[in-house]
Length: 614
Image (tube, rainbow, N blue to C red; front, side, top):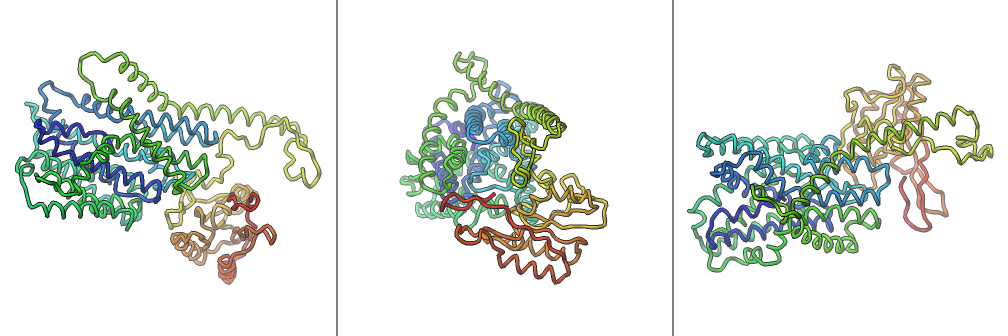
C-alpha cells in the first residue's frame, strides 16, 4: 500500500512516457475500492491487498537500482529513510488516532493488548504479533483489532528492506548493480516463497501463512522482476498490437481481480497458488495499458479517469483509515458492520480523512532527505512524528509496569481485608442464603486491573482450539501437556465443549489438586460438542475427533460438560437440552463414561430483545 507511485514518473522523462503509467494509478484506485467495499459490505477478503503488494513491487526494484547507482552515493540507510518517510507519517497519524479511540471506547482491561498492537504496527512487526497470538484474519466485528489491517504494511516494509539490502549488496566497485545475480536471487527467493505459501496452505496452517513475510515475499518479488521488464524495456513500451486484443486482455484482467471474494475467500486461500489469479489479472491490465493505442480500450480509459486515479493517489491513506473507523463505529453503535447505516458514513469519513492526510501529512513529510535545510514547520512536524513513535513504542511496557504495580497494590489490600476475618467482607452466596449485608468499603475480588485472573488457565496456555481449527490441542504453548489439577495423578476428568465448559476449569483445577484428579480440557471456542448453530464444519470435525479420543482413552472419573442452551422465551422454561447434547450424552454413556452435566450460564435478555451471550 505504500506510496511509491512517484518513482514511476522517473522511469522516463518524456511526457508521453509518463502518461503511459497513469492507468497504474487507476489500478491502485480500483484495488483500494475493492478492499474497502469487501471489508465494509461483504465481510470477505478481496484481492485488493495482493494487487497492491504486486504493484508496489513493480515500481520498487527499478527505483532502488537507480538509487544505488546515483553519483551522489546514496547509502542503504538513506534509501531506508526514504521508505520510512513515505510510510510513517500517515501511519503514525492513524495509529495515534486509533489509540485515542481505544482509550475512550474500550474497557481498560483491553488497553494492554491494543497498545501492544499499536506499538507493533508503528514498528512494522504486527504481522508477527498476530502469528505469535495464533490469530486468523477476521471479518469486521466488535472484537476485531482496529489495527488488524496493518499486517500488510509490516509485511511490505520488511520485504522492501530485504530487497533494498539485496540491491546494495549487489553493487560492484563502480557502484553499478550487478543485475544477473540480483535477478537470480530475487527469482529464487520468490519461488521458495511461493512453495512455502503452498506448503503451509496444504498443511492447514493458514493463520501463519496469511501473515508470514516469508510466504508473502513472492507477491512483491514477482512484481519487482516484472517491473524490470515492463518499465525498462523499450521494445515492450514501444510495441503495439490490435486494439481488440488489448480490450480482451483488460476485460479478462478485471474479471480475474474482481472474482476473488465472490468465488473464494482470500483469507482462506492467500497467499497460496490461487493468488496467481488476481496477480495475472493485474499483469494483463498493466500490459494492456502500456501498449500504445490511439484509443485505449474502455477499461483502460476508466482506469485513467479522474475518479480512479484520485483514489489511487489517496489509496495509502484510505487503506489506513477505513478499517479502524469501521471497527470503532461497530464498537460504539453495536450495529453490524455490513449495515449501510455503518458502511456508508464510514466510507465517506474515510475518503475525507484520506484526502486530508494525503494533502497535509503525506506530501509535506515524505522524502526531502537532502542536505538543504527543512522549513521550520516540516522540521517541527518530524520532531512530533518521532515523539509519537517513541510514545507508541514505550506505551506497552509502561502499561505493563503500571499494571503489575496496581495489581500488587490491590492484592495487598484484598489480603488485608481477608485477614480481618469479617464474614461481610466477601460473603459470596452468603448474601442471599444467610442474609449477610456485604461491605462497600472493600476492593472487588479478584481485582479489575487485569482480566488474566478472571480467565481460565487454558487461555494463557493456549490449550483451547481456535474457531479456525479442528485439531485437538494436547500441549501448552511451552510444550507441557494441557493438564491441570493433580498432574501426577492416574485419575482423570475430561472437561469438554466450548467456553461455557471451559469457564469452570479454574474451579476444577482447585478441586483436582485437592482430590488427586488430573483435569484434562478438550475445548474449542464456540463449539459445545456437536452443537454449532452457525453450521461450523470445523466444529463438527473437532467434535468427532474428541469423541473418538474419549472412546480410545476414557477418563477414569468422567466427563464434565455444559448441558443446556437458552430458549430465549421468557414465558417458557429459560433453557433446554438440545438434541445434539442428548445424542452425544447417550453415546458417551454407552461407553460407561460418567457425565457431569452442568446447566449453562444464565444469558441476559433486555425486554423482548436478543439474548446477550455471556
